[in-house]
Length: 366
Image 1 (cartoon, rainbow, N blue to C red):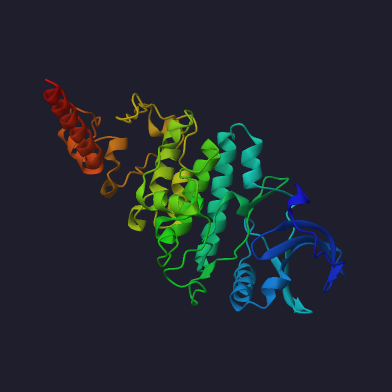
Image 2 (cartoon, rainbow, N blue to C red; image 1 turned 180 degrees about the horizontal axis):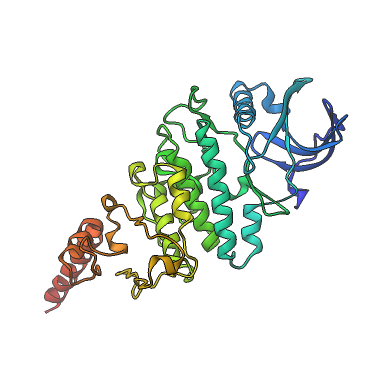
């Protein structure tokens, strides 16, 4: 890790009972050091609230919320906290030191991440989130930088700095947007009250990025990214990575629904579908527009899982699969054109206007 980008203006020898070894990272409010806990000789990650933020009530409250949120959680896929304290006006907490890299570094390290690795990390993150949600904690900042991977490929969620403990009042009020724009849910981008579905949406973006090396929505500024999160539909991952498993693509697209009621209603539901993914069943799309999915004629048992539909009919997903009668969903079906007009009426209207202007121009020339 290149530490030259981090400030070295304030690196003490000790903080409380912890001997500082080196600077590991720096965020908006907190500095993370590798440290040794005296007496136990235990290596820890020591997260310290920077002195300039220590007098700010909101920063201190957020820092304390993160410590309390992690202290409530004891799971293999979530970093463990050891101690929260304050000394000489410095707020800190000691947590498990993960010797490895974050998921963003792992994605960048591969030209293409192996599908088996993507599935493994996706399921591990799901299990960590399932446990956090069972404890009524919403992470609200799921992104590759906040997933740590150790040398045994164990993935752990970290950085609960803007987490919400559902049973308690939130630090941030409705109408205030916090998070990372590329991984925000539509409701988060609009500053609405958040539910567990916001973590599901962000996890969908994270899986999309593992598949394609980039999130589905990006732009030159955060406001433009937030606008896309609210208003634009994502491209299917298979449009950028041809070996995307068909069922995994359906899972990702379901997590990225704009309306919360059309997404998975729980991480448990999503994890069950991930367990049914067949890595050998690829998306076969004859054209980008028709998005035809080739049916696998083999019996479900031969494919290694019990078939279960992922498509939610309320969401207009029939364009990605088949009709209600089970047949192929093609341009020869009346439903296809109804669905096309419903979703793409603005584009069709613009094309029609361009044609009218073209013929008007020809008439004027004659």
